[in-house]
Amino acid sequence: MGKVQLIHVGVSQIVGGSEFGLLVLSDMSETRQIAIVCDEHMEYEFGLRTDKKVNTERLLPEVLCSINPSMTSEHYEILFNSVVNGQYKALLVNKDDLSLTPMRASDAILLAYIAKLNIFMEENLFKRQSVVCGSTKNKLAVPINTLTLDMLQKALDKAIEDENYELASLLRDELKHRKTETE
Image (cartoon, rainbow, N blue to C red):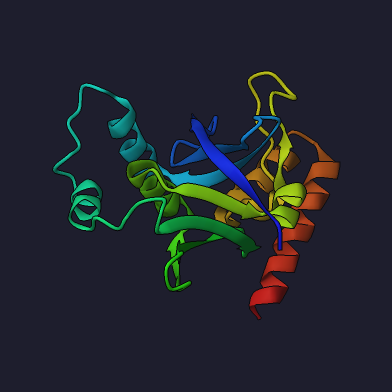
């Protein structure tokens, strides 16, 4: 299994979807990128850490990292290994004993950001999910299989309203596929 190392590029808001944001990651050469959907709370958490005016050293994630001296890239890394029901699956990998701890994707990225852990994605998954960086100015493509059911339904409603029937068909098919998987 090959893996691609990723770097955190930033946080982006979804236009018209204020309750969701995107955590943008790219490969080390910054030629391809992926976007991971996050909630507004996680957007806020990243905002706290990128605003140099706010002291975050007493916030829970920073405190937990500081009391665990082995929480470093020497001992841990983050690995994204699949997409299930519209969500990336992330694992905290203990490199000492090879134990795997499942995490919510956005929490894994926040932990990596705070503890300066390396982030990896399985190579085949990255090839399938990534898009060329900057391929469309001011827009970021998000693979349909990474949208939540709520987001898919809203996108379907919008596509129908805009009379974009090709997109509506794709969204409808993805919704049907997900409902079949859960049954």
